[in-house]
Amino acid sequence: MMDRRAFLYGSGQTVLSAWLANYMSMTPQKAEAATLQAVGDGEELIAALTKLIPQLMREAAVPGLSIALVQDGKLRWQKAFGVKDTTSREPVDEHTAFEAASVSKTVFAYAVLKQCEKGVIGLDTPLDRYAPSPLPDADPRFGSITARHVLSHTTGFQNIRSGDEPLKIHFQPGSQFDYSGEGYWYLQSIVSRVAGHENPNDCGEYEAGVKICATDIDAFLKSNLLVPFGMKASGYVWNADLARRAAHPHDVTGKALAKSQPKATDAARYAAMGGLHTTSVDYAKFLIEVLDPKPADAYRLNQRNHDEMLTPQVKLKEGEKIDGADAWALGWAIQQRKTGDVILHSGGQSGFRSLTMGSVQRKSGFVMLTNSDNGGNVLFHPKLATALTPLLTK
Image 1 (cartoon, rainbow, N blue to C red):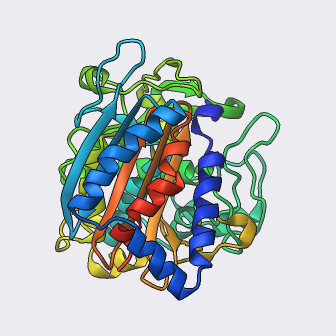
Image 2 (cartoon, rainbow, N blue to C red; image 1 turned 60 degrees about the vertical axis):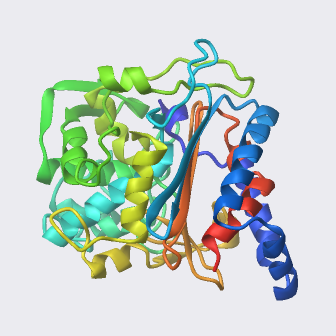
């Protein structure tokens, strides 16, 4: 399971980082010229994407892709390309569900911050007050880990434990950045303990022999975020509806891979770090709530916590930068641009790649989901990045 869930620092991320570094280093005159050469953010953009995306998919052997654009706080456009499965040749449509991979973390982070707002857990309260340490050996540093550390990837935990590298704390929590799926798993286990239920009679064994028992995290996230936000086609546990709509994963040659069918135990391990199945339209509904929030209610953050979610918590050093980000907030990477911050998150696991970006200032952004290990070669292609720049830049 580790290979399926590990965050991938692949060629797609490298391409985007290089493109952004080049663009960000331009003189103001050159940057302006580059933007003027790009298409606009209205019908011109849609026409350009409709032509460009199939071309890039053919070049990269990516079977299927779904994209949704948000503009001025509204769903502007959605389009499905290609097929769910190269064996069946069934076309992707607006209802097709993809594995969001690590983009799942943004949704979980929002739900956690609402629990903090409600006082169920504290954003800066040591998590060991709610549950015992998951570490095999006592480490006094564990007592200082908070939800803020988890959401900003500053816990000190590695990304994913393994038999060769058991779960441990690698530095003083809060002192530096290191991307960690294990941190998100641990925070998910806290949420399940204090706001949900665990079934000790339904358990499984995962990386490094860790025992995970089923929880109601799927029902919790549906009732506390997915359904209130209109994301009724999204979820974490396999069912008949998802089986009808799911895109299948593919390797770099375009060969179909076996599709995972996550059980409740799988969701208990992976929901927060990468277990969301969603459509581009559904995820766009969530993105709209982030970019142009409605008034606070039982499910939506108040303004103070919304702003805190998008406030940089830790600066990224040169070797730490992922997807061209300069900092990490609570659940989101941040590109700090002169024209306004851009929030983003990418994801990658076996047979799926995903990317979302947005400008709070412009209330505009996008989400793209693919069913291929080559998806990054489309999502992070310089031509596509250039086309989408006007959507994120004033």
